[in-house]
Length: 153
Image: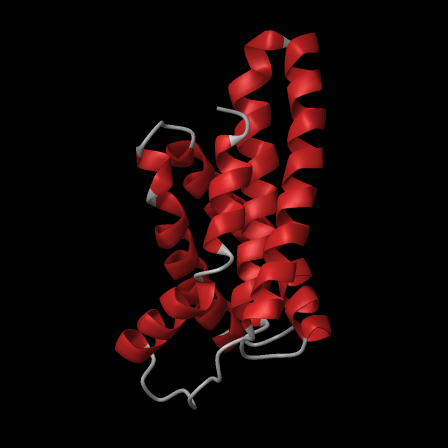
């Protein structure tokens, strides 16, 4: 169960562009056409994300063994934060430079973390979790567009 989120999340990194393009075509047709990210870049992002998720989940697993009743909450909080951060920034970097994407994430970190937790909870359910990354990619594409439209400050 602890490896389910990192593995499925790393795999969705390869398909984020396709999901984001479908969401944008349907809900944001006014946006200029976005060129797809190179496969090499998608693979590198996926590998980096997998490494971060594995390290964070090892730490969360150790903490959960120390305080077993908190295990599900540690799992959901850890993966919610990581998935929210990575999915949001991947969606944002399709439309803005990395520095701007990181700044937007910092401004709205709480709502992004909450959305990540809402994705992490069903992702921990066997078989259901296999479909959640697609929903997550669509969710964070919508969240990026919504947050980007808010006035900064």
